[in-house]
Picture 1 (cartoon, helix red, strand yellow):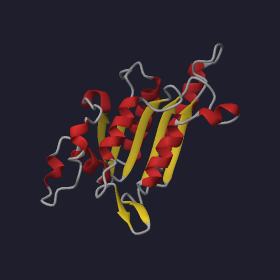
Picture 2 (cartoon, one colour):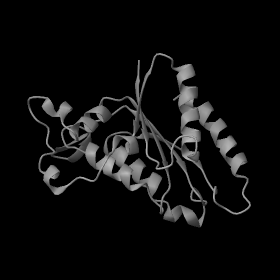
Picture 3 (cartoon, helix red, strand yellow):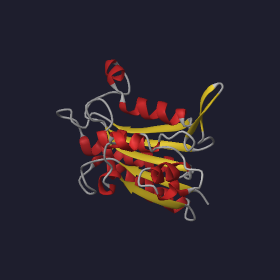
Length: 201
């Protein structure tokens, strides 16, 4: 049985978010073909993730007695490393990820939990896991001139590789804010693609 961590990072709620329309469809399709897997949903806005204050930075170390699992911040790093698969759902905001998702990444990037330092440099501690990033974008950023400006998925892919997760797939719905675009048609196609991909994720 695998443990899936579904990380939701959109200020728009379920039923309104186009990102969640795709991601929730992915999860439902996944459940049908992986009925015994555990899915943990982590909605960052409902969770109340905030920026790390200076006082917390000094305390972000792994306690030897194992009490870190009850720590208000370290518990997220433990939850992350204990998952086998990751589904991230977020829109492209201002060419990058929502600030709350970056704040969450600061929570989980903890030496001794998700990575460690060695004589050869940093090594990820999440080897052998896989991730899918489900994102929506107003313009075209996968190919062409716009690709140079896309820094959301690129950042997540780099960060997950830093953790040791190199099996990283992106599912993106693009041009959703382009005047004249068939938004429903775009979304329906990407939802179908996501449902198919979920079956073997």
